[in-house]
Length: 286
View 1 (cartoon, rainbow, N blue to C red):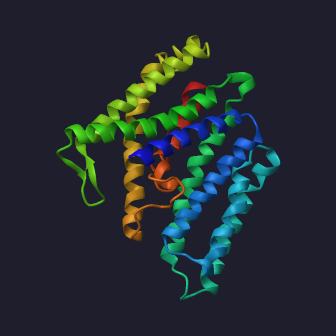
View 2 (cartoon, one colour):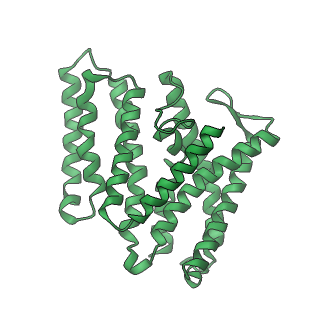
């Protein structure tokens, strides 16, 4: 537990430092680096080694392209690059027929797509909510996403320890309970609303945050958003656990002592980030 707490404190400190670079290209590059490390964790998890390295290497420039696609020129390269990647994988499997598993390659592509989509959501928030016009709303929503995910995880953990009796999904994750999940949902709502109240007051955005395009307070919408986010966080965690169980591994990596790899920390973020980003951009800033 001591190691986990120390790692968490260090991780939050690094997160704060990263946010200081939010309005620069450095932020995009850091998110890109995190994404690539996460993809490499999947590459290792499915059992690929040096022989199949090209399958991973082609995803590095592609990920960089996605995370830097804020200019029209780069954005125009995304579609043809996606096509080239898919054709490359198809050709590679044909050439390496019988030596490279289609199932493993498909798993790598699918999981990598989820990871890229997740982390690109943070970049997308930065792009559509520029600081010059919306102050630091994008930073807030990124932190809200993490608050939903990690706050929900924390509440679910303690609620499960205190009241857990009924297993939620014993085959996939024996330690998760229905009571813990309920605690996670309630905790996510509370954390989300509190974070919104604090930001709206500190950033002097109360007038904006007390009304939305739906004609109701954003705080109510954030609470409802928290419910869905909590459920998505649980499913993200279970999805990552299913993959680990089928791959026969305990953790995706060792980058965070006591916590595992990038995916062990961001599994609950995977589906929350795109969902919150879509709702925020479609509902609050039309």
